Structures are given as C-alpha cells and as structure tokens.
Image (cartoon, rainbow, N blue to C red; front, side):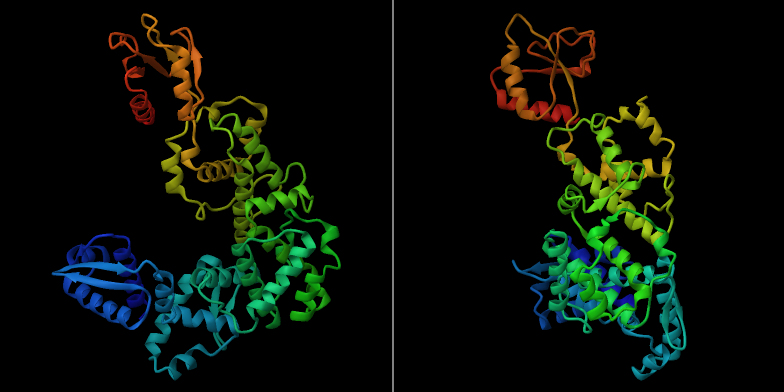
Length: 475
C-alpha cells in the first residue's frame, strides 16, 4: 500500500512540475510503469481530486495530461492527505503516543500477518538512519532518547508543517503560551516559523517525558554554547514546562533544561542569533565552535570577492546551527576536531556554485588561515556552508580593468561612470603589463596580445555596451 501511495505522490509532483501537457509515455518512463498502468493511475487521481477540494485537476488531451491548478490550490494538503493513509504514517503516530501491540493492531484492521512483517521490516529500514530500532511486545522505539526526539520532530514537521496542529496531548495555545514566556525571559521575539518549530518541539518533549522517556546522560557530554547561567535559573517558562506540564523530577531537570535550550538555539534564524549574542545571552569562548566559525568567516571575507553588504553574520549563524545539529545527531564532538557527515548539506549546489568563485584564497599563507588546515573536518565543512549560504547573485569578482584609449575618443571618466552600474569592483590600470582581466577599447584593431580579454566599446549605444559587457564577463 505504501508503495502505491509513494507512486501516486511522485506522479502528482512530476505533473505539477510541468506547465504543459505531458505524454503518458513520458510519465511511464519517469515512474517506471507501463503507459496503460499510468493511465489507470491518472484516472484514479482525477477522481480523487474531483471529490476533494484541493484546487487541482487532471486535464486530458488524447494521451497527454496536465495538472490544472486554481490560483489558490493546496498541493501540500493533498500530499499530506495521501501520506496519512500509509502504514508508515499510521505506525509513527502510534509509536509517538505510546507503546502498542503492532501485530494485534494490524490484525484488527484486517491486515494479514505477511503484510505486518513486511511493514515492520520496511519501517525498521527507515529508522536505522536515526540509529533507532523497533522492539516487540509491546512495539516501541529503542535508541538514544535525543535521536528518538529528533526522529519524531522530523516526521511531524515534514508532514504537518503549517497544515494543521498534529498533537492531541497538548493544545497549540498551550505551547504558544510557553513560547511567550520564553520570549519575555530572553527578550527575543520569535518569527512565526520559529514559533511553530518550537511549539512542535515543546509538544514532543512534553509527551516523551510524560511517558517516562528521559535523556541519556551521554547527551550532556556535548558541551556547546548555551544561554548564560543567569537566564537559566528560576525562569517562569522553565517551571511552566518542567513542573506544570511535565511534573518532572529534580534528577532530570538539568539534562532536559540544557536540551531544550539547545533546541531554542537550533530553531533561531540569524537575526535572532545576532540579538542573543549582542545581549550576551549566548556565551562562546576562544577556540570553541562558534568562535572558530566567526574567525573563519571574518578571515574569508577578504578572500571572497563579494560586493559590500553581504551579511556574513547570517552565514556564521547558519554554519553554527548546521554543524551543531549534526553534532547532536552524530554524537561526535571534540574541542578541536569534529567528524560528521555532509548528508545535510547540498553538495550538488556547492559543486555548481564553486565554479563561479575565484578560489585563490586556498593558497593563502596567512597564519590564521593555515591554522584552519590543522582542523580539516571543520575547515571543509565551513567552506561548504559558506559557499552554499552565499546567493550567487551577490557574487562580485574584483576585476582589474585596463581601458585602452585610442586617439582620445574613449573617455576614461565617462566609461567608468557607466561601468559602476554593473556592481563590479573596477580598478583602473594604466600599464598593459600590469595584472589585467579586461581590456576595453573603442578600436577593433587593438586585439594583438590578449584577444580573449578585449571588449569593444561602442560610443553610440551605452546601454547595449553594458548589456553586452555583462554577458561578456559572465562567460
């Protein structure tokens, strides 16, 4: 059943990605089924969309199909509704709320024993990447508690997001009340997305502790940056969570408090990170992860040739959050060397963007930069994060531009005034033997030594010059 649901979702998403009709043969090739099967599948999808108001409809012309969409449509809700019918969804929700007899539950819903064993095996494969396993009699997740919580958070956030509040044990209003107390305590106001993410986490933590699922002591050995001690003690919001909602015993207070503070740091965007650091609500010391990230980005600013206004703080905080998130999941932390996976980073995007950068900073002899080479895991990870964080539209190489004046007709000041519109860092060179990346001339005869560097400047059409020059530089 789950494979059928996955196939249906895949087919809908593929159709949605096109703004034109797609042939049944092309759809069949993408899904890996026959054209006849695809046509039957699309008929079922069409009937389902007609019966439910998602603002989406399958339109057919001969053997070609198009997913018609209203100005207001709900693709996310459609996929969510389909996913809800899967056994994976069913099992995860049951596992979240309590241990249960999986085989008996399947039998009560008229599933065969063979389907039960197959579903159980498939589910175990899905949770192995979180370091978790499935135990029987009763059925429950086994593994480190922090990974179980991350697993449930990733499931609920991915599937529910802003569609609806998924929890029955805690009202959304109660979670928001807790968040408002947190905002008053640390004097930071969360964005709407931050609020919702934190509300999900509160619901997950409350449920796990109520069912007597506590953090292992291993987690507390990860000693990363935290909210300062003064803000940790006697906070109304902490009492509200750990006493009123959870009725937590004193022996679990410290572990749960530190874990929850770490979650707050994970969900914050860069702007709120900056506010917390400026108010000294987040402490970091020389040599720790955040300090290293900041030094890395400060030093790389002079090597990356970027236009003014690039927000390095955004990159720093994004880097720290990603690294920290992976540390928590992989449980590998050392003051100087960190080993972790790159699965969460967009390596293909990096490879694409990498070609757009002049990477001469890699050969720098700067002492601080050289010191980074002694921490290769951190260095490589930060390099990936930095390059992934920069919008390629903001990239601005520093070009040394030689303007060749022929018979005094090419006016340097006029040309420079127009070049300033292109957002490049132009440096005027008076000697052709100096470092030159571009030669602008108004004479087609001057293309002897470096023909690939010459750009012809046409005095009669300045705007066309700028358009042509931009294309010339991009090539």
